Length: 84
Image (cartoon, rainbow, N blue to C red):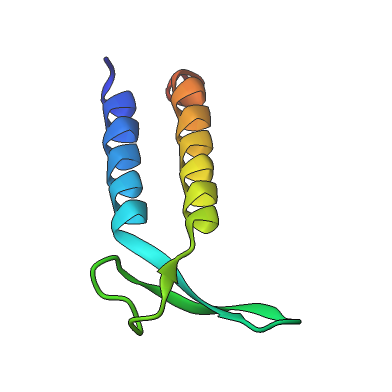
């Protein structure tokens, strides 16, 4: 395996671990007629901004899909980028 492909795989693994450890948080408020989700930003998954905050799994899924897509494209075109 070429060095560029190894670097893409290592970068992919690092990005996936970072996305899984540093997560987005939200706070859900519910009443009889209204339901609101407030974004509280990103932080380490063991330290929520407030105890009532929950992890926003939809954003994490989108991050995983984006990272995988970008790494896949880079892996496929890496041979064309290095050939001159």
